[in-house]
Length: 253
Image (cartoon, rainbow, N blue to C red; front, side, top):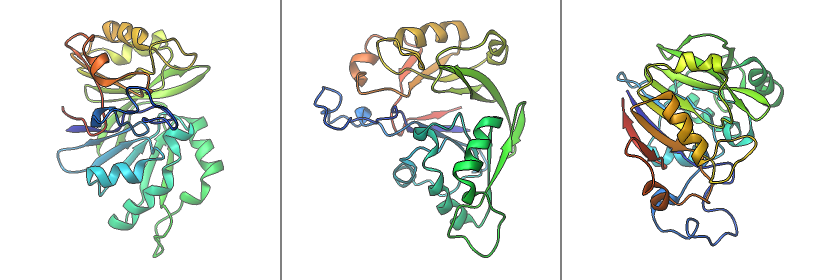
């Protein structure tokens, strides 16, 4: 399978409005970050989308993404959820309902705020046609096993996800000890790395690197970065097994 980073940016995106820092004025495409999201493409062409960022339409056009077979929600903050309406294009193209998966509070939030998207298929495809599923243990999505991994995002419990030996972990501030058992044998880790200085709901560069060393994955990619982190300056001081993620980066798994 293959993972493509749709967006490696934090909630404000990069460039940040009104900012003239080195990252924001950079002409390097690796410093242009849309809001955080990724897709996993399976060998048979099925696609698992992780989060629906507000930039989903732009990301899908850029990557020529024409189908989504399942959506995994890490949590329901705006920068990870509010592109949900753009799923209607995939429903229209493929004439199929798309299942959504997450923890109970996240699904309840989607039902409350975006209930119009939760519909059974019919002859009418001008709205999203989605089905919401609560998951609290390993489950099947698009025909593959997915394991939800509880992590902390400040004071709330959200999900990282494991698909095979890949783990996608965004917006994490701490990992409960019980979740480390689910991280054993990971080969590829995508992990939150907000900025240099500590933050109450995200790991910083040094904290992200400490988690990387404890988890022990062979390949590690930093995601969900603010404009405070310039691609080349950060990459130059990272160990060989850690890479700075960027929009459009593809990883063969």
